[in-house]
Length: 253
Image 1: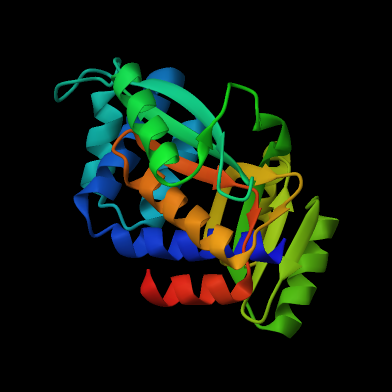
Image 2 (image 1 turned 90 degrees about the vertical axis):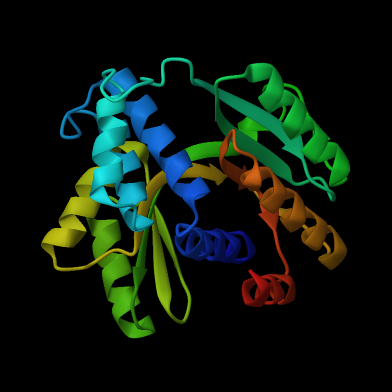
């Protein structure tokens, strides 16, 4: 899973850098508002809201912005986000990698039109509902930056505490959990004074689609363009990208 995991890490780092732009904060605030509207404004009782707030904090979103987004869900400060609709779009990249697009929109027709145009212009193909969802599953992902020797020790500890699997490279460790064991394991690691650099529940591919260099470059352009759309919150893929393409992307992103 290295080619996929490295792409996810690069996207996360790029997202943190892009947080200086207002668009990223707007998307994070929208997610917080919808989570608070659907599950209540108390983050201790609303796991979706808690995770949305954690994602915002990881992107250095100011607490004032987070508080306003939560209050907006109860109608304080204007629009309560009631018009926002969560929609999942599914499709394929050049080379056949599966793509899932998570959208929050107040205009279903606009979102569908823009997403379809993006797939078409970037040599991808928008599919029917359910066409690629089967190849993804919800998983907790906890990332820890540690030396190789220390990472192995932490990985074995995480497995003992309920983690399903892990992957490590020279500078970081990724621990994979079920959604149910995600928060208990994250808290257990913190109690062991093991800080995390990223912790979220996301869509993980069950299998990967290897991409040739040219297809990988086209797929990355498609993913980037989709994420730039105002209505799109997150994009997931099972594309497995060649290391040289990821290294080139990392230096230009």
